Amino acid sequence: MSTLIRTSRSTRIKSRTGCKTCKIRRVKCGEEKPHCARCTSTGRKCDYAEPAKLAVARVLPVYSAVSRERRAYEYYFFHAAPSLSDALDLEFWRGTVLQICGSEPAIWDAVVALSAFYEHPTSSEGEPMHQIERTDRLPHPKSRSHREALIWYSRSLSRIQEQIKRGVADYAVALVSCVLFICIEILQGNVKAALMLYHQATQLMASATESVSKKLETTIAAILLRVGTISVVVDGDSPLPKQSLPSSHIFTALSDARAALYVLVADWKKFDRDCVAILTAQRPASDAHHLRPRQQALERDLLSWDRQFQILPEVIQYRNTSNSSSEHRGIIAALSMTYLSILILTRTGLSTSESCYDAYESDFAEIITHAPIALSATTASGNQPPFIFDMGTGMSLLITIMKCRSPTIRRQALTFLRQSPQRQGMYFSQSASNFLAAVVAVEETGGKCSEEQLAVDNLLNSPGRVPLDGERVFALELVPWETDDGEMGTALQYSRRETTNGETRVVNDMVVRRVNLCRFFKQGEE
Image 1 (cartoon, helix red, strand yellow):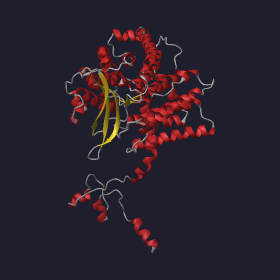
Image 2 (tube, helix red, strand yellow):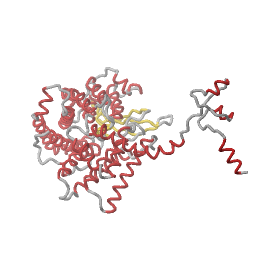
Image 3 (cartoon, one colour):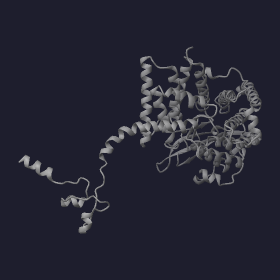
Image 4 (cartoon, helix red, strand yellow):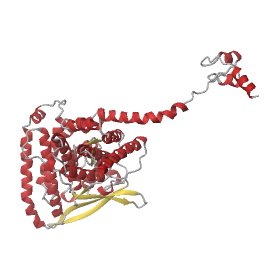
């Protein structure tokens, strides 16, 4: 019986790709498209089955994982690296990193992870995170690109940890991985982890041996100096790597000018921290006279820096031409903004009146003139990158919005801040614009403002006014706040000084918003 069945089936004419109707009728299909001749000649409906995709689907994941890694590497090469680096950083981002990742799997994994986060950045808004200690509470990744980036990042971490455990970790690989990991954490919004990685990198730098390439050490030291300065500004207590400190305040190159200014920014932050302690009564007012020599020395160093900076060939060209093709214009503009803002804060550091900043309105206006040049240098294809490694324009614009009370200049600075990269160093520019708008609204309305008046767009469309001295905020803090109906919002707690009958007192107040204003920011309290 089995023989007969096999014979019967082998002699039947079958069509595996014929139309459905002919298969049902068990007749030979001519397979003409779109309708076969047998069906059309008899007036029957003719349909073909959809081609099977199962066989292809089974093999796609095997190859797509590899291809996505290669694509991520290409994205880093053509997009992320050029945006992360400027003309002074080419040696590291498009030289050192690419050379090492070609032979070191841990760096390859870190590069493709960084690239994936760079191409698909997480939102800088998200959950309310008002303190650095809470920035490691990251949301669960929802997209495949983020999940895959985390897999690559985890794989890179595991490989580095395994090398350390076996005692075969390469010093250069460890340092480069630290810098890449810092970028990855900042792109996720995890400032706490980024600061920890920076401290690990400085410890590695301190343990360097004579066998380490001096060129590599110099390149990475310059990178870590800028991370360290940002860490000092954000965290207040981060040491700068000794290898990165300039041997003197004298410089003749733009790269050395940037390094020297970053050291001065770190010095200013330490001075500012002590000033705030006195102004908020954490230290006796009598300590102020001890800070005068530091204030004068820092001002002298800043002015000396500017004299040398102004005679650099690139800066002379910047002042005398509007040639936008110069690769250094954006760097010079950002450094000029940083210098002006820090000089203002140094000169006013010990003042107890917010009106002292009115004397520097022309300096704030000059900061604004540099902003579009600095922003155009980081713009690629009409869009700002999600992250740049430097402070960029963020800190200078933030200072301008907070301390300049000219309604026009404040709104220009706020507009430029909203056009900035989402993350500049460890500053979250986009989310910061929300709470800065609230500060301006509180000052200009005397604290009597509605929810609508606190919104950025509404503020930018209003003419504003110069607030009185007693309306000006000198310290603020953002804290999570539960509204009356049980929703989580944000409370902007602020302090101002009122003078009545010759006596000055500190007034503390707050305004509550139903939206998350920013991930973290704290001023006026150390």
